[in-house]
Every structure is written in structure tokens, then in C-alpha cells.
Amino acid sequence: MPLLRNLTFWVLLAIIAGALTGFIDPALGVQARILGDTFIQIIKWFISPLIFLTISTGIAVLGDLRKVGRIGLKALVYFEVVTTAALVIGIIVASLLRPGHGVLPTNGDVSDYVQRAQHFSWLSVLGDNVTLQVLLVSICTGTVLSLLSVKHTVLPWLGKATQWLFALLRWVMYLSPFGAFGGMAFAIGKYGIAVILALGKLMLCMYLTMALFIFVVLGWLLRRYQISLWSFLKYIRNELLIVLGTSSSESALPSLMHKLEAMGCSKSVVGLVVPAGYSFNLDGTTLYLSMAVMFLTQVYDVHLGLSQILTLIAVLMLTSKGAAGVTGSGFVVLASTMAALNVIPLEGIALLLGVDRFMSEARAITNIIGNGVATIYLANHEKDFDRAAMQQAFRD
Picture 1 (cartoon, rainbow, N blue to C red):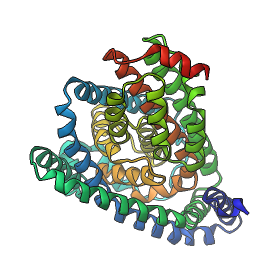
Picture 2 (cartoon, rainbow, N blue to C red):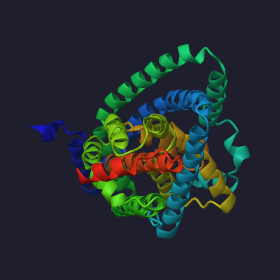
Picture 3 (tube, rainbow, N blue to C red):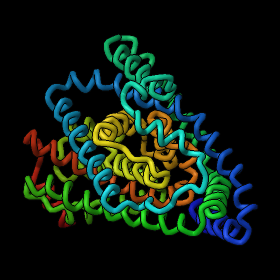
Picture 4 (cartoon, one colour):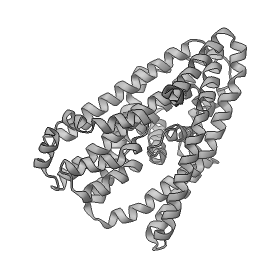
């Protein structure tokens, strides 16, 4: 049966089984924590190589982007402005709706993290933090490579290493039902049924925020050039269904590029913006990261001041660039973000493991729409857009 080969089905089954286990036998649920912890430990092994390969390769490629002139510069500015807007929107919505409020640990295990939050700053982040050190090394490596002619020899090997890493990550994600069972059983067994209510509220907030971002922010960007967002969404509906089924925006990349060219975007703009956007313009992933981190600060009652939130945004602007359109990578980047911040117990991501698979679909759909809108916007801004082709494409 196709259903039995669907990973989402097994994750959902594991969530239900874990919730029942934690509710019926809380002691057994707490013991099941080892399954979630083991899965998280495996995920942690991917953090450093994933960040190094994606960020160093992405920055090295930017050397070529600069050579193409103003389009590359405009694309980079657009990516940073829009993804930062997504981060801020996610933090604001999570702060206002507080989906994690009321799910407090019943012991003092996190008192150390609460104290760290009171002194959270760039100086504390830069201390002995291995994750942030890898980020800095990745940036330096990518910058150096972008300036050297040898990069044309090195980049293909880095690309292959990245492909192998993501292939291995896909296999690891088959273990996610065990992690989901352990994480949910432990959460219910230790914190009670309030965890399910909080996760449901988080999912609702996440989907509402992403819908708000798509139809308000991205819709406004297209309206500046008298283009209907709804018509564009209908035009790429098949690509959206592919993304929905695979939970990966990368799965529809070739088809998206073809359709953007067919609707009037020049080949040069499409070839530049779309691939770069899959590393630097992941709107859905940045929304998810900001809301997930704020959710966990609320769960553990860790309060961040304005300067600390600004530092959080700065860290997320770096770590979010290490998330590719592969299922599960967003979860790895969340782990790397929390490791970089070091004010929330890393084990807290076990709470999100059970629903991450379902939120990944919303992330992926937002990512592909965001990259499509970015390409259309920049093509129009460069006056390199055929409106007659767009009208014909929308009619077909």
C-alpha cells in the first residue's frame, strides 16, 4: 500500500502512540526519552558539516553573482530584506500569540539556561560556541574561495559532498518516527496534555503567519507591477502539489524555472535568482525558525530583551542561510540555531519533532512561492519581463 510507504503516515502514527504512552504510563513515557535524545544526537552530527558546506559553497558562488553586475547585487539585497522581514514577522506573531506559554518544566533543570538568557549577547554567543565558530569559518572559507581561480575545481567537489550529505540525511529521516514517539511520549509523560495544545497552537500560528506573509508581503511585491498573486499561484499549482507531496521545495526547482521563463522572465534572471534563492531566500524556513525559537523560549520561560532579540535575528540571518530545500534540513538548522544561541536546552527540540514533518510542508510551499515572486519582481525591476508572455501563460 502507498500509505505504508509514506513517512508522514508513520510519523503521525508514532505521535499518536507516543502521546498515548505518555498519558497512560507517564513513567514509561519519560523513559522513552532516550529514543528522542538518540535521534537528536544523530541530527547534531549533521550540524557542522551542513553549515560549512552550504554556506561556504553559497558564498563562493557569490563571486560569480557579483560578476553579472547589478542583477546579482539587487538579488542579494532583495533576499536579505525579505528574509529579515520574515524573521521579524515570525518573532512578532510568536511574541503576541505566545503559543508556548503555559508549558513549563516541572523541575529546575533549566534554571541555568534562564540565567544564560539574562546575560545573552554577542560576547556570550562568541564564547566557546562550536556552531558559531563553524559559521565564521564557513564565511571565511567561502569568501576566500570566491576570490581564487581554484574555486572552479573545488566547488564541484563541495557540491558532491553536499549531495552525499543530504542523501544521508534523507536516510536518517526514516528514523524520525522513533524520535517522534520518544519525544512525544516524554513530553506528555513529563509535562502533561498541555504540550499537545501548545503544539497545536504553534502549528495554527505557523500556517496563519505563512499565509499572512504570502498574501500580504509577497502579494504586495507583485501588485507593485500589476501582477496577480492568485493568478501566479494557479499557474504553478502543479509545482505546489509536488512540493506538498515531497515536503521539499527543491523537488520542483527545474519545473519552476521552466514556468518562470515561459511566463516572461528572462532566462538570465531565472538562472541567477532561482538557484541563489534556494540558499539565500528561504522565506518559509526563516519564518519557521524565528517562531520555533520563540516558542521554545516561552515553553522554558526564558525571557529575552530587545537587544537579545536583535542578536537572535542576527544569528538566525546566518543559520537560516544553511537550510536547503531538503526535507529535514530545516530541523537540523533549528538545532544549529539553538546551539548557537545556547540559552535554551537543545533537548527542547524534541517537543517540535512530532509536528516538524507537517510544518515542513508549509515551509517548503512558502519557500517556492517566495523564490518565484523574487524572480518575477527582479525581472520586472530590470525591465526584462515579457508581459504578453505572462498573459498568455496565465490563460493556458
